[in-house]
Length: 584
Image: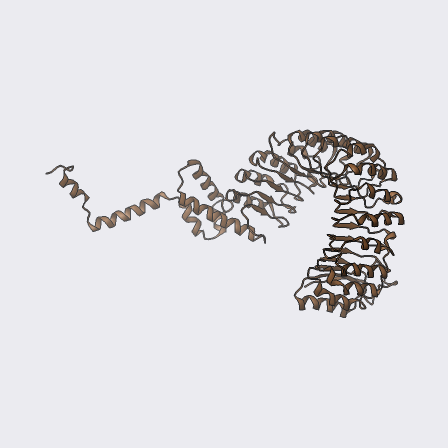
């Protein structure tokens, strides 16, 4: 016998019969099948979701664990990983679509979806398939409170997350603790929104103690969280860990005022802060002064909102020097602060230093009307985009001074003059100052005592192109405008082609006094609507509409395939109020 390693022996060993080749292929296929994880095949042939639940847990838990085991072992089959990823994304799509949303691998927006604790648990099992996720919004789902830990435990799978919004979710202390503990898993997080969660009040420290040096949080939203002085103290201690903070919103926390003495000085540690909102927080003169002492350290501040804090009345003289150092300030909102004439005079001294100011809101400060004419010479009018002087009791002198200033406001986009009776009968002064290429987008003239002649001038301004960019026009509660005024305005609708919202509602009144009929000018409106292609809302409350009038409004939407919301109400013959709207 010849040895096996001889040339002839090797030749014999390489010869295979057809039967041997077939059997060898069968053995290879069987061996390959044995090596593949059974789960990858089972995923394609799952009978129902219920059977998965019977075999253990929510759908996807076993798949997620198998995928994680393969990653740790480092020897998973690449083909199987691709299959697992595809199936996982399919489950993500199914979950999101059943909530009426569109799936996006980078942005998960599930606000107002009536999510439950069970949904949160299922969502947690899907996070391994959302490794590219950068934004997650679960706001306005008040049934998920108390179940956040099930989700935060899996945030390690979405380490790229930059924005997390949990507004109005009824968060509990345990939720805040879980979120704070999970911050290490999401080191790129920049936006945290916990607004409208009353459970944050008294428990903010549960979240802030999870902050670590080097975090990237830029925005912290805590609107209406019932924050207390203890929360202000906890936040004060955390600000040193937020050197990159650019936005801090503490609005509508009326119990916060007592803790501002601790918080305000620590704002010095946030040199990049651009937006500070302390709207309706019960500020008084002392807290305003404490806050003002931090202004010299906030050189990047661009937007400051101190509105609806009546307690600061008479306190701006003490902070004017600090306010003047906010040289990059672009927006100053101090409406409804019960400002005095002395406050306004102090602001007038500051305004020349605020060369970048583009928005100023002084609305609902009735005491400043007599000296408001001093305001305009100090403003850098060429940069001003928004000026709100609603309900400021402007005098005739102040109104004339404003009209002269409007000529220099080449970038003016929003002008609010509502509830100032001095405008009535003199609207022409402001309208004549508007140039043909004026970028004005919002004009508020509600309850200004306008008459028919004012509306004729408004129509004329539209005709010459001064209102070509106007999107919002408020003319409500101007009972002195007659039929001719409304009809003429609608006739010049071609000059209002950018209009999206128009309000001509009348003052509320009882059935005994009656409501003015809409029928005389309604044909003019219906004729104008085709020339208002962007109009989406037309408010006409407290006008008397007949059944035929309402039918004509409904017919317009149907015939033109438009979706204009006609907001109206009327009184029936029995004297009862009927509210309604016509919308296709």
